[in-house]
Image (cartoon, rainbow, N blue to C red):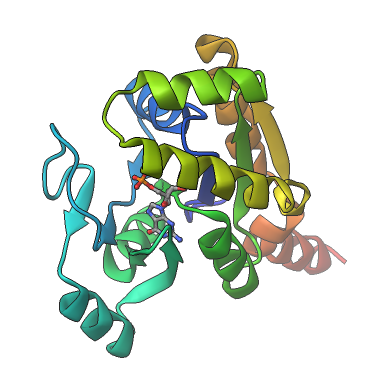
Amino acid sequence: MNKKGVMVVLSGFSGSGKGTLMKALLERYPNYALSISCTTREPRPGEVNGREYYFVAQEEFLRMIRENQLMEHACYCGQYYGTPRPYVERQLAEGKDVLLEIDIQGALQIKEKYPDTVLVFVMPPSAEELKNRLCGRGTETEEVIAARLHRAVEEAQDMDRYDYLLVNDDLDQCVALLHGVIQSQHFRTSSQKSTIEEMRKELKSFT
Ligand code: 5GP
C-alpha cells in the first residue's frame, strides 16, 4: 500500500453539488483532508473565514503568488482563487488523501506539476437541473448566475481532460463511487515504486 496520500482534484460546474459530495465524503471516511483555498471574493452569507475559504485582499493574494505559497491559482469570474501549499504537502506526507475543490484552470496546473493527481469532474444529472439549482440557491444575483452559466459552457469544453466523470444524481452512490476511485489510486504501480523495488531486491537475494 502506498504510504503517501493521493491528491484528488474535484471540479464541476457551479451548482453541480460537488460541495455536498465532498462534505459527505469527509464525514463518511476518515482518511481525507480538505484543502481550504484562498480567495479574493466576498464571503457569502453563512461562510466563515478559515472554514469555506481564507478570504483575503487582492494585495495579500498577489504576495502569496510572489512568495510561491500557492500550488496553483486562477481567476474565476473576476476573482482570484488559489491553493495554499503547506497544508496540502503536510497532509500528503502524513498519508492523508487530500481533496482540492478547484476549477479547471487549477486542475490542469496541478496535473502538470503533479501527474499522479486524480482529476474528477462532477456533473449534475442534467443542464436543466443545474440551472434550477443555481437559481434556487438564492444567494447569487441574476448577473452572477448568468456569469456562472456562461462559465459552465466554457468548462464543458474541457470535461474530457479529467480522469473520471461522475454524475451526482444519487448522493450516496456518488460518494461511494468517488471513494472507490480514490482508493484505487493507492494500488497503481506508479504509487508503489518502493514496494516494487523491495520485492525485486528480496527476490534477487534468493538467487
Ligand atoms: P465559489 O465562488 O462558488 O466558491 O467557487 C467558484 C469556483 O472557484 C469553483 O469552480 C471552485 O471550484 C473554484 N475554486 C475554489 N477554490 C479554488 C482554488 O483554490 N483554485 C482554483 N483554481 N479554483 C478554485
